[in-house]
Length: 83
Image 1 (cartoon, rainbow, N blue to C red):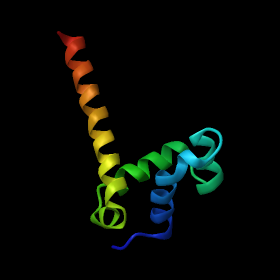
Image 2: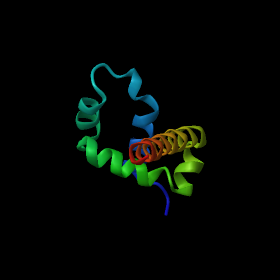
Image 3: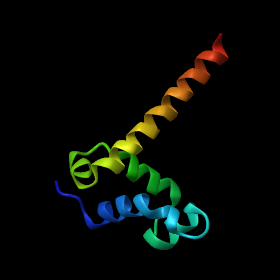
């Protein structure tokens, strides 16, 4: 299924959000009309799609890398806590 307008808006926002003044969470609400939690939920699903990969491969690759690094850090912390 091709990307929706909302999907493209989310990817575009994520690519450009640093240009916005203020906090990212405020910009998410103002520009996309989403709660930050919902935004990140949608973004997480979106970056796993082939359509998002085709739309902006560099952004999607960067976001996947960041997500994977955060997951690895959580696993490392959890392993350290139990030892």
